[in-house]
Image (cartoon, rainbow, N blue to C red; front, side, top):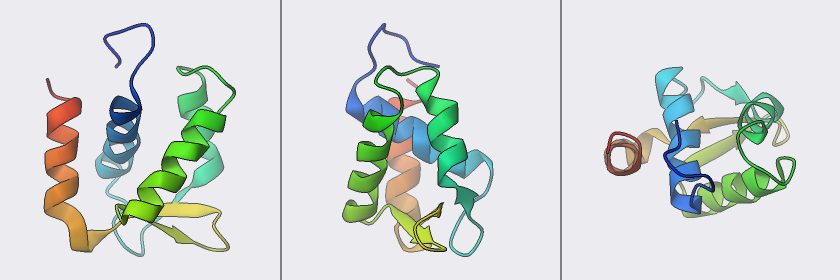
Length: 93
């Protein structure tokens, strides 16, 4: 999925949102956070700590929402246009 050896933070964020987008995880339909981190940590170094930090940034920016004691995440349907544009900018280049 990544073109370079070391993907940028923006590419990883787009990949996180693209994974949720492909699984149609908007609003109350959520995805386990540990599964997402484990899936991405195979491709990215630092044992998932970088992925967890980027997920936290996306939550703080309002792109993702946390559910069930912060164990699951979903895309914020209120920012759907911004999310789709962000994914298109970095994933489908």
